[in-house]
Image 1 (cartoon, helix red, strand yellow):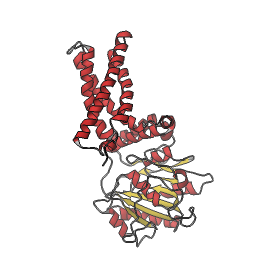
Image 2 (cartoon, rainbow, N blue to C red):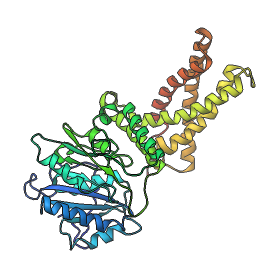
Image 3 (cartoon, one colour):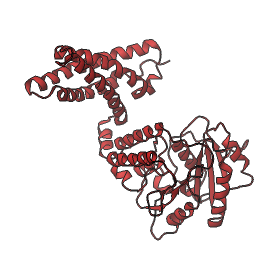
Image 4 (cartoon, rainbow, N blue to C red):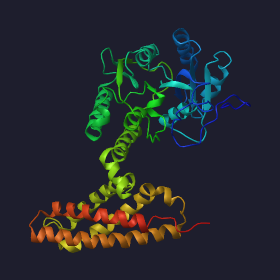
Length: 417
């Protein structure tokens, strides 16, 4: 049984984010599987949860009576959404509730719900009533009743009959801009659907079973298309509604997470992932290291200009380069210790351990600086390449050196209790 008998809440899986091929507790999916499981991720949706459960139940009782389940997955809302949903369970026998206290995030909430689901078709809908529930039946018909096998049915704002109700010009621009950016970074994923930002869709269990998902932020559809075994896709147009109750959870942080997610998918799928696996290169960590390096490039280039340009201090090029790079090294160490290698740093966070990492990082980067200065002088003095272009090339070569040696020497667990 998956239910906790003391309070009737679903137990939260602690395994990796992987959907089982058959529902947990079944015999090869025969005994307890049902047609459809719909996950409703919530956070502070106390004002909406009763209405959405009632509306969905009315629709599904008519379409597939008794052959579905609704799973509310709540991230321990301060307004106790989970408790309100739990109180509805006697009235709605198809309703199940999960309260997550040690995890956060819409995407992982959806996956945790799917992990305990019994359906052959899995779905997700927002708990704020911005996704019109009646569109659910159109998607269900498309994925269960069609002549051909459909792996994924997506509710799209950009398909025929779709749109948004009253978005501002800025929000429309950001949404379209994010989609265009995604098409540039990950065309083979975002190019398959008209609305890759949609959070309202259904997918066959068989299309994502056994695949380890690694979502960031709230765009779970990207993860499903990028890592799942998705062949045939259909889309159903819908008009995105404004909230009736509660506050929007869209923030700038989510746009940053979206970009991070795109880069992670790009690095972990396709040819780059094959290269990473073949040479045992942690591409995701390298990308974070490179992004930190970009901040160092800004510091380095700015100081190089201030120190060496004839219109400023006009110091000799080599001396200017050494000073600029040393300051950039300290900048990069700080961000790498917090972000790139944060999982390792948090295991050894005493000051003497941090200073030890800084010293090793500095020595390694100074060796990289020797490479950097050598390449810069060769390109500038021998080949006459512009000093700033030559500097960028030299930084790129030194970055590869710095990452690989720091990975092996600076950030590693060497002291254990």
